[in-house]
Length: 370
Image (cartoon, rainbow, N blue to C red):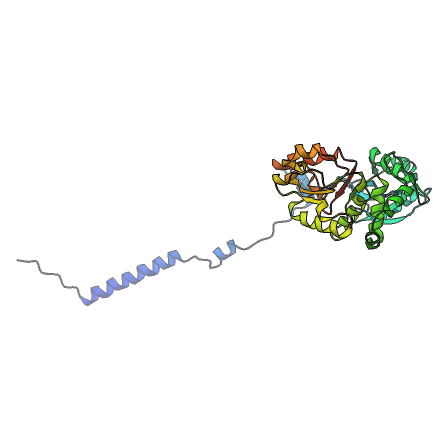
């Protein structure tokens, strides 16, 4: 037989419920703090008790805090210094331009010019000009160069960038050759003005009338130097016309060789026919290939126009011919480059240039050898 469950009376159920409620109340009372601000006060900031000086002195373990904030260190001020660059700016004058020096403080352009004016007060200032750096420069007569250089070297806070002695010697020689507007040839191969005028009288009047004043000055410059010059005017200012005029003065001495880029051969032939009436189309020989070698002709023509490349290919034959005048157009190509073909072409031009009496170089393109 299954055991019978014992029945719980109503009184026992009420007593058990009362015990359960009492146990819950006791547990809540144990978990709840007696002081409600106990945990909140633990997180509040509080002031430290101020110690009196007497208590600090009595405490042997007390150490006064030391502030260890590092001081900001500034670099020492730079010494003022500038460079005085001396440059040739004309045949009879030179300029002094102030420039900064690396590692030194630059006083400024106006301050440097004021210092230069004080230091060189005994020398007469010609005028001011613009230097190659775009700044301002003082201009003095070339005859005062040694005295100015001596004064600048004795000044403190300045470096002197002198003019190379070789360059200075050449400029002084050329400047001394033209005194009071009269040209005196400094070298035997140079021509006096009387000879220059005589050569120019043999030129066609149409050609002389077309020359502008600056072009006429360029022609006289080349003739005074015996037909050996460099004309470096900008493009469109008539370098070709000036070269033809100079070469036309020496046509009776022998043939003329014109070296130019291949694309300009026809242009040179047209200009020669236009400005030199005594130069007929049959007198102008254009070289395009080996079959046009002027050495194969019975008589060497008055003018031979050839490219740089063909001159290199016909170098041996061209060296055997006699040339009185040589014109090298776009002469800035005569420089050292990294290309393998160019040095040989340059060498061919230079070999022939060493043999001719009159050499005219034309270039309107500044180019540096690297």
